[in-house]
Image 1 (tube, helix red, strand yellow):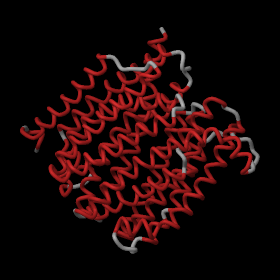
Image 2 (image 1 turned 135 degrees about the horizontal axis):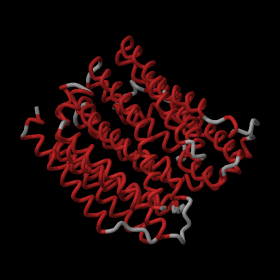
Image 3 (image 1 turned 90 degrees about the vertical axis):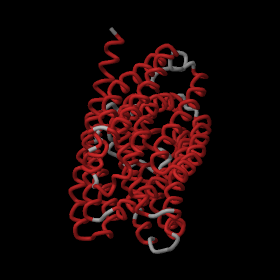
Image 4 (image 1 turned 180 degrees about the horizontal axis):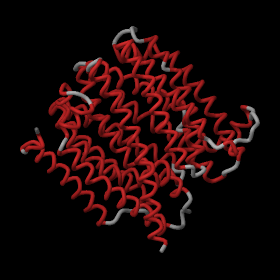
Length: 448
């Protein structure tokens, strides 16, 4: 009976969060389509670079607030912790905004080889403040089990952000990139605040010192995750910077279009891992390895049963999807999509195991595994693109994910958590089917 209930719960969580992510992805792709049609690949490349800058700086300054706060709230569940989380989110957001302003000349020089983008990069500090607040509100909702409110707030934030961004694209052209990023993040933060249940808030203003003291254990753990995220995003940023300097901003834009489609599509499937699965894994004690293994394997099997058919359809009609969401200018990215799509099925398993490491509070081990994976991945990406272009880069993405799965599988053995041969065979066959779909797409009517 418990197994049936667990499966039902997983499916319900995946459908709820996956549906909301689907609508968010549609908003993101509509925005990308409008940018591609009105402004071209150059604007798409600038979007990728500016968003990556926000990710890198924000990843450092937020100390992965959402993940560590979600863990603390789900365990304690009292108003003091919630108020401390929200207070800390303000502090981290302001710190991030200030750091963005201070580093803007250096970032512009490294990324664009000049200081022309200094003002635009410094203005992204407003986005960091909004994103930090948003993460605080999201952690409250997910930590308290408000999955529906969390999903709805994400969707409405994306819809409003898109609606406000469109006039900016029309009237400001290339100058609209940074304002649209800021508007998008501010809209999401305001909507998230609206959906946090009032009865969860204490109604008092907590002092900074009290908030810090309350959150010190979580922040220490978050520091390890932050360093890991910084290294991973930093490697992503280095790859984009390398492409920008060695090739052209249009090349970056075309690659970013493909990687965005893959990451957004994967987000539809993996959303439940971060918002719901992580909380449930954290609640299981270290001694209960049987229950932990059962949950991990069931989660992987459910997600794969949903992901594989969707990925096969996506690969078969890759040209149609690229043309629909971008334009024919972006068709050179199609060869990249086959290998990158196959990597998603491996990512399902690697993420499920990575969340086990996080839920055990093994910050140092998590940092080591992420660091090895990030640097190996950066080297493989540069070499593959240099000698094989976008198609080989897609398969490099698959190789990188396999390497990461091996690393986290080794680490999880210390918690007596491992995937069975059954899951391994399903993952292998799924990847092969997706790659075969890519070959079929090249030689049949699907390629038209």
